[in-house]
Length: 366
Image 1 (cartoon, rainbow, N blue to C red):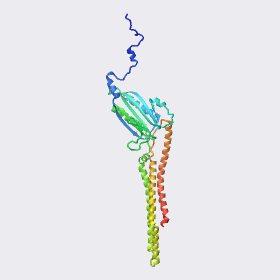
Image 2 (image 1 turned 60 degrees about the vertical axis):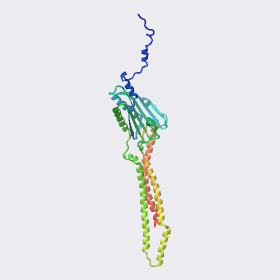
Image 3 (image 1 turned 90 degrees about the vertical axis):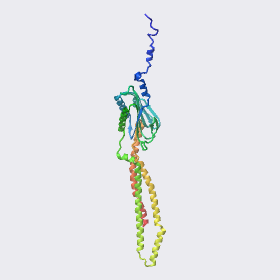
Image 4 (image 1 turned 180 degrees about the vertical axis):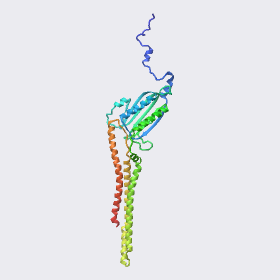
């Protein structure tokens, strides 16, 4: 009987030792090149921006995760490689959580306001028409546009700027899907867009119109006040002209048979010229109109600012974020009352100014 090689019974073979540290890839040697190119190749990107007020809670994040995960697993062979949640706070700090379980048990103890939540999925998916799995990435960013929110732009967090020139700083959701299968990407984009729109909060139409046309409302309110003042000045001017014409008519219709009568009439004309009634009236009217014009800008600006009363968005992932939400809602209610007060004050001030102007000059005009 031949002798067994030394160490054959107690020591693992080189082959066995190597197998302990091997890396298994989900593909055959024939499809290895395709698999690597699917990981390293540059995928296509779908981007969607959804603007509107929303409230994001922990349960909403959990629902979105399960929605995406179930849809992807139902359609193809898929493996979730990584799921991250990054929460950004108002002091510039952030927290990165590497799983849904970590997120659900995490509780922020600092007195900071959560402003942005960045959700990202990384999947390896083997499509039916492909021979090897390919990497697909999904990013869903919920950004509440207040307190200097940072937003994701070109893979970097930058200070928030309004989109398309409008004031959209009260909530935006950015969706990005990096995919290698167009049909799959479009289907997922449609699913998430519909879900996100379901999270948006609806407001009465008159409120949406009020902040959409806040500038126009401010101009109308200012012009309304100024128009009421001009009407008052116009009425007072007509009265002044009527009084002057009536006085002149009485003077001309009186007897003029003696030098005394002619002398009294000349004295009246001289006194009128000396008092400069017309000049004083024009000067007073001009000052009144100029001051009213300034007040019309004040009322217009007040109304426009109060009308810009959009419903804010909230990422409710910290205790202070909840408190901040309640405070902002109280401020919004006060601003609504301020908007109503601005319109009432403009109309009331125009009427009062008109009456005061006419009353102040009524005795003097006579």
